[in-house]
Image (cartoon, rainbow, N blue to C red):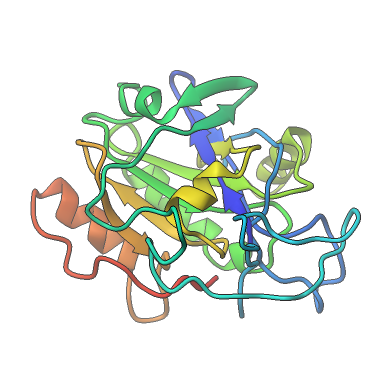
Amino acid sequence: MRSIVAAAAGLGLLSFTACSEIPPEPPETQESRVVDTVPTSIPSESHEVTESGHGSHGSHGQHDGAHRHVEDAGGDSGSIAVGDKVPEFEVTIDGKTFKLSELQKNSALTENGTLVLTFWCSFCHSCRHVEKDLDKLAKQYHGQVGVIALDASAGETAEAVAEFAAKHGLTVPIALNASGTAADIFGTGRTTTTIVIDSEGVLRYCGQFGDNRHAYAADALEAVLAGEEVRVKKTRHKG
């Protein structure tokens, strides 16, 4: 997977989409992998990222199939750990560029700067397993918390993301991180990896969005909003 960024705001609502796979290929062979991407819109295993943080893919629509797991935030050289202040990076939403700090100050998106970012993209198989729940979370906290799909996958386009979101009824903001820096910052090697950032800009959770028994991201967000310690701070990055 590659890094993914999603943000929605009409300065009101941001749209995001991010994932780590390469444009459409047969479902049987698709994997989720984070890679650099260039789209902008609102929104088994996942794609992985190479040492540089960018997913290794072949020419359009193909990837090499190699995967690697990043166990926690801070696991890769240069990435931050839970408890660290998140450095600035930029995302594009509906053709407009925003810094992380600008998203946190957008009162139409978040009341106090709290953000939930899930690496996602339009052509990632594993993303199909979480996007409905991500969309539901975004609706639940609309106007209170900035819940965003972050698309940092190579081969992605703003047009493809917008078309996919409309076709599948996704309203979660989708943000594009064309540079792929977000994936490097969080040591993310898989799409669907989710980040929870508190009102002070501190990373409070990094890992799976959830599984059949645990709603990791939702539980972490609930704790953050309640001013409590997040019980499970990090989990294995797995799409």
